[in-house]
Image (cartoon, rainbow, N blue to C red; front, side):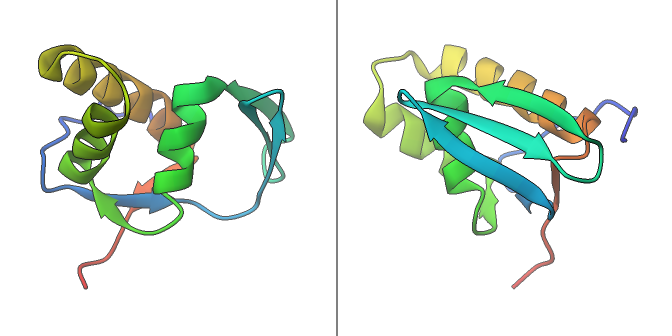
Length: 100
């Protein structure tokens, strides 16, 4: 578990950490962390972010993809993405990706 707050930058590369079981339930992603034995409901947009993190990507790529897919103001999107990433990070569900 990562308790340190993260100051996400647009160029930070992140990806899913390993050992999670994910399923679609009525359009929302749900996940079980095998390592922690915890269940998470990521919701529709959170599920989309999770799908995008299957491959390493930057924070800006996440934001750009969501802005193209949903009707949301850029600043609102940035704030919500940062908050969601903080939650995933604090639970150990994402990690920094190595540079390619």
